[in-house]
Length: 66
Image (cartoon, rainbow, N blue to C red):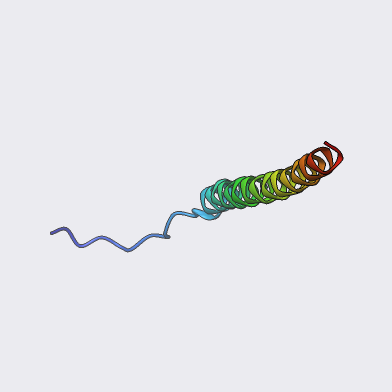
């Protein structure tokens, strides 16, 4: 081994900040995608239940009139 003086460590601050930004964006997009998908499922479930209830009431009214 050669005996040479130890130099300064490379400054990776900019690379770290760039990758932190990339990972933060990935995390936020993943959270948005999951939350948006879950909200879509919840809204569709409520719409389905409401429509089924309305159609059942309508069917009961039609059978009562006949």
